[in-house]
Length: 272
Image 1: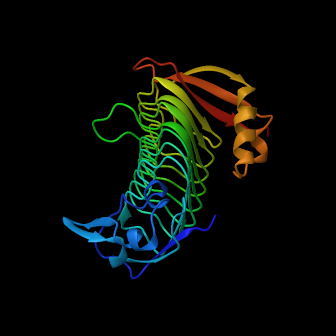
Image 2: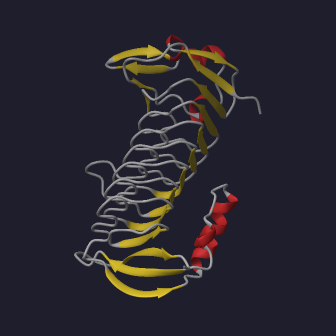
Image 3: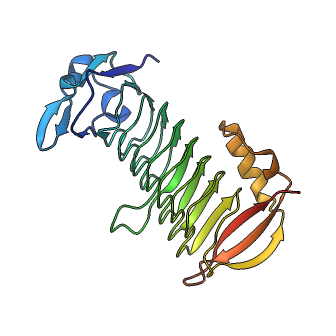
């Protein structure tokens, strides 16, 4: 299927809100109709054609070119199709999405995949904070789907997530998995402080040494068989898996015991 291609005319100095840039919106539209789609520069309503060159029409595949780090809400609530960004993506990319795929050949911003329930987001660079998290005042964050980040990420990764998978190969900031209610977070790099704070359920897997809160209680050292299935799945999605991750023992810590305490953090113990 031919893609609809949007190329940013010039670098933005002011954030642009562009919820209309989604396969659900453009797949049935002609080029002329896409050019007229609304976007917001502050409180001012503009059109897509004011900021983008547009090629193609009537496609569920959307390709974006340029530095879109100031373009917010791309792919919000998308249910199908694909978005490919050749450059950096902005805040709230893929928020509330239920299906489809988003690929970023660059960096992602804050609130990437926030409260998503399905689909796949792949960022080949780094991401900001609150990846897959719940918005302020919301009880549930990401509750389905997969987020794969090749680089680093910021604070509060997976905050209040209930289901789904988050994989981060680089360093993450403080409070990774805070208030988790379920789902799985794979940390292949180093992590900041207070990982898993107030988590009630869910799994955090750390492949590097991790500083734990004192409210996480050591349970055992074992080789979790279920982890092989997860790692195989991630490998099939193109995530490089460290050699020491398979066949190694893992220390299991239960927590956060300041709350319900049915979550777990698994810390890899590679053979000497």
